[in-house]
Image (cartoon, rainbow, N blue to C red; front, side):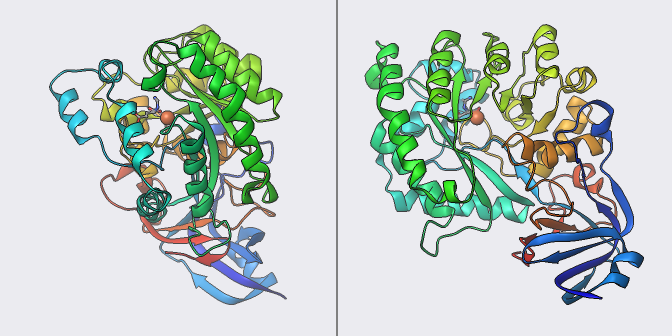
Length: 429
Ligand code: NIG
Ligand code: FE
């Protein structure tokens, strides 16, 4: 008998989301790899064995054993698109939109993202860390064990580096602020055109390309992320009123030239060709995709770029139209779901709620929704080899659910379906 740190056994469903081939597509998305009466053995923070309880309990003994009879166990959820670091809120804008103003009209008038830019520029590093930590606590309680975090609310060199410092502090850059949620940083300097460049957006792009990107890359090389082999992405908001296709391409090409992997916010309101650009550049993901054409869906399906859908945005904006998730899955796109947690378009920390919305309005099956928040979300962060499924060799990020059937994750809503969160083999909540 081998002795390990932790043995979790007699799960009614051990939901593995196993995908030895990487991202799941097509009919594979409907399979979450359930082992009935399953067990998982963990040592040194890693999964060492997965299988039926009878077999695993005969082969392993552990310092800590958890009998999870009556519960399902699934991988920790991966939130592949968030803006969790920001200052202030947008409650006023929420009311404005309820009165009929649109998201892009508010941005055009100097509000929206720019409201958060003013607040974030004025905030100290400590204020950013403390407010983001509270949001991450909520996300963790709701089952998120890894989250991507974007900059893009400072839009100047010092402020973007302050946002990155906040992310690094929360990731545990040398002091005791480390949050249990693993963070993956993304530079989103091209999120909006800052007020001081309103009449010369291309000059702002020059600033992003000539000063911000090199400074950010230098920061990354001295950050904890590079040693942990966690990537730093570059993203751009390709949209009317933000950056057009040509400008988006300039930023992403410059990032690629510096060796940074890229992502894109594309087709949230208007289709500018951002998806084709993402495919052409080999982007790790293309996100939003609310108005993506069938032609671009086919291009995405034939690529390695993951389509990250953000239905909490549509919900929060009161929009009855959602990204055509069914058509994407049927065409063979590897899709992920994420919250997009941000103060403007989705003040939502909950992946279970996102899955609940995706099932009802995008007609995802529960299995498709869970794969989209685990293995495919990990793939959308280029980390599918480490997280996102319960497979031997992966990080032991696990959720013990309150119910015996994982489908309660999306069937119930407005509740927390998670009983216990295990991060790298340790109970953190
Ligand atoms: O993904 N669309 C651009 N960026 C965010 C919203 C940011 C904000 O409104 O503060 C998004 O929806
Ligand atoms: Fe976003």
